[in-house]
Image (cartoon, rainbow, N blue to C red; front, side, top):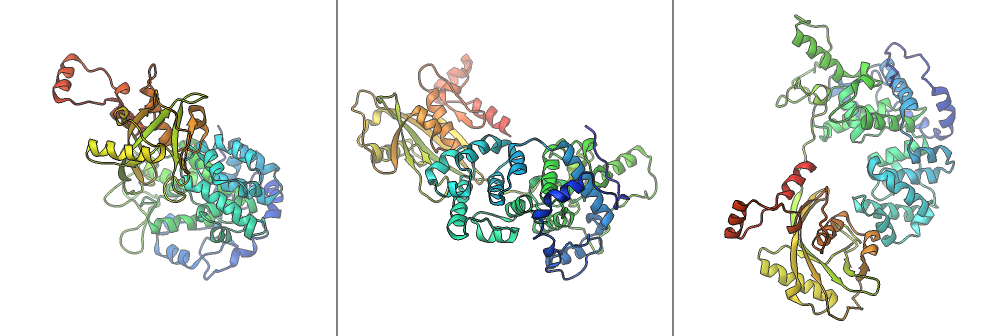
Length: 528
């Protein structure tokens, strides 16, 4: 795959396909250009004409070394031209891009972008078509029920986003006359759950506003291009990245530029194995220059003071360079940038959940109850669950009481412990102790209180249930005669999934009455 090279001296050269892009997007740029000078309090050296600088960005630029900045129009122009030329040739053929090219209604285009900004491309691609077919307009989504939204969103994760997406649709229809806000600022102010990145992506791609965006992919690209090695989640680095993104965004093709930056990070400038030889902006990349410099020094080709630009802060330690505690690692190359952001480990919680099954006219039925309309997994359906109890006896008692609250008197002796499932949400690591209770030879329960319902196994798989509950159900199914099912993405411990121990181990197991799960550890290692 050939790559367009970035030529710093070609600032006045026309960008490949830029004329066509300017004509195509001119009608969407009426808001971007008039706002270019709004809020400008000082000219920043090297800022292309028409780019605004917010006060905090001006202070920030003055406080860091110019090594981490784009200092002249030629560099910015070269970066834009090379990136957009590469994108025009190499962009992935994705269904929403085809749809956007044919969609003349800006509100519908913006609505599609809202959906896309909620999760990763690889994850959302299988959901996008079904979602847009069911609710092709904001008006359609606004009239849907939360149950329908949760059902179609199930499996994408971050379930609150689906709910907020519908809340936003209702606000647009009921309060904003059916029209989406046109700028990043108003999108963020008026729509629930729309943050800075989502607002910028929608405003630039759907409405042509010249506003930069920073997601994980863009942050990685910018950190490498300008050799920013500090924690990208810190306030200082985050502000710097947003300032660079705003400086670089092409006012003629802002939506394409932002998508190109995201595409570059997703396909070429990847976290662990970047394809530097295929990068269109390699010649402008300070991380790549650092690699070449280190290689020359290691080989002895450079002696004395090499003529290679380095960071030279005015005072003290540069807060954007690699921290002294984590110096340059020769084996990592450009992957030195950025260093992994510091994250708090997820909070650990435990609960007990039970799959209650009874025979039905159309086959076996299982009981589901609905979660509250706020909080984690709001509005989704799950198997009856209780918080974890340290005593097995207390655990069984609490779980049985919860089951009887929904289904009436039940035989306690039939309650069986089947194993456990560990599922990590964004901020919680939740361990489910999985139980099963099959009602056989009893009169089926036909009525349940509001908030509960009986479903067939087929209905369960299309219901608004979380991925965690699907994992729980697979453990339950694995304990039925003739089946043994697991999950690649979960840590599962069940009698069915355990390897048969050797004779000596069997003796020890019988003596200590213990059960040793080997699959849980191997699955956890694979996930990591």
